[in-house]
Length: 131
Image 1 (cartoon, rainbow, N blue to C red):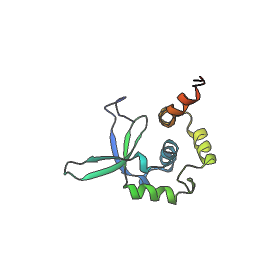
Image 2: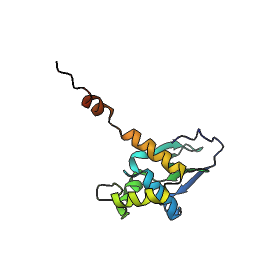
Image 3: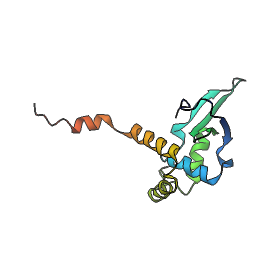
Image 4: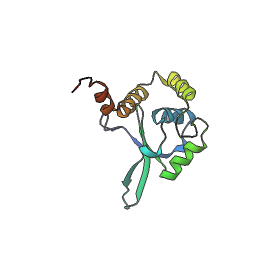
């Protein structure tokens, strides 16, 4: 998720638990495989390491403060995720239906699915030649 589409988009640093429910649902949909593996790190002006989960909407670029442990705990405590830390299928379908008209969600879900594609397996499946 880069901010290159609109470099003037305001960057908002906020705690996940202080977001509106609808925004939390959109974030869960984009990060359906959990938050911890999607965290980014940077250093603030005082040299302190900051860990955030990036999330972009049409008009804002959010950086949601959380440590790796907090990211895991948020998912563990959320009934929308299963015991393995994945968004439950029925919840995911519900959120997809609910937010299908939001371009920023569609764009980010498409990017996530492209990232999950196993190019090696696809190449192996296409190789039917006998030696």
